[in-house]
Length: 472
Ligand SMILES: Nc1ncnc2c1ncn2[C@@H]1O[C@H](COP(=O)(O)OP(=O)(O)OP(=O)(O)O)[C@@H](O)[C@H]1O
Ligand SMILES: [Mg+2]
Image (cartoon, rainbow, N blue to C red; front, side):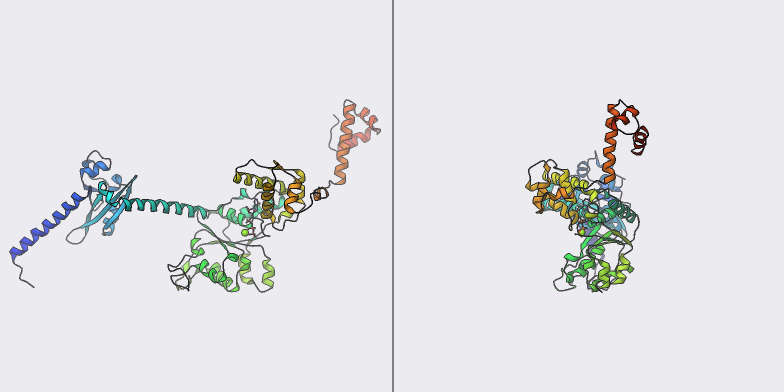
């Protein structure tokens, strides 16, 4: 090591100070904005040009104020707290972008005593392509995130479940009650009866509504991928896996609701894994030995007979009992024919809204024809029939003939299927009409009305009372 004379030390020290001073001056001259804060992140110095840019009358106005009061998006506090610089960052302020570099200032002991920030704005034209690309990417990211959040919100509420028949009302009552509880829900019902719609509505009315609703259609995903789909995978967990790994649906649904659709189609191996998650609320992603804990509410649905699958040994009975806590049987359309008219109106309205055309009406005979069908595909099938009828017919009111043409059946079925009034009801209606006419002809005098009809006065009074009519 060379001998360092006191003279050398003195020169070196002054050179070091000079270097620091020059570097600072150079940075300052290169940058339009310079700002210094103390350890409490209050502004101790700012150059005039930057102060004007930030809308202040003078630099003095900024002194002593917390930096965020002057620059709301400032990251200086983070630099002071972490002691780490942030180099060449892009800071958004209103509509403008700044390129900023922030460096912590430390004392001899290495303690952070403040920070200095340099901002480029007028000279940004070199960086314009980069900055505008950044701005575009930020906008794209924000809209993608918004869309994703919307996708994960419940799409339907209870008001979307059309129907006031006793069966529909009961289902809605049970589903509303399920929304208030946090237990597993099992929705059973034929295809197209509205199980998915109800799952959304239950989530949307539950305390978890603000958290994600994630759906997995068990039947639509190949068996080999289902485990990764559920539990996620670490990078390179299996051949053909995403290199970056992936989040599983259980993790995505954390805090919210996971809708397991077509659960009856799940393999026995996966049923065992699912059972464990339901019991412990934890799992291991594929290729990982780290346990992940989640808080997920399960809503499961199936259109197949689960009890039969259990009896056949294709569905684990312990999983069945786990799922079968709050079970809601969604009735088929043929058991809620009283809702046919309301459903048709709702569907026709949604079709016309989508097409931007005036809503079509439907004739009573057409409704009768519809009520007479079996509807194995339930409301989904009804929707398809109405969609096709709207496409094929130009008339403002869909007729029985329009419906029959679409369904490939005879329109005459409608007449055979007309609901027959009960005998007593029809006779009573006829009697009421006779008494009313007689009373009118006799100017409201009962003895005269009775005489006109050829019956006794007492009989006339008895009939009036039985039919719920008054003498006038
Ligand atoms: N009560 C209802 N009111 C209005 N629309 C309904 C009703 N029930 C079902 N729908 C509509 O019928 C279609 C099928 O409903 P959904 O997908 O919920 O049935 P699903 O029971 O899940 O059927 P699958 O078992 O085939 O999956 C959807 O377009 C849905 O909006
Ligand atoms: Mg479904």
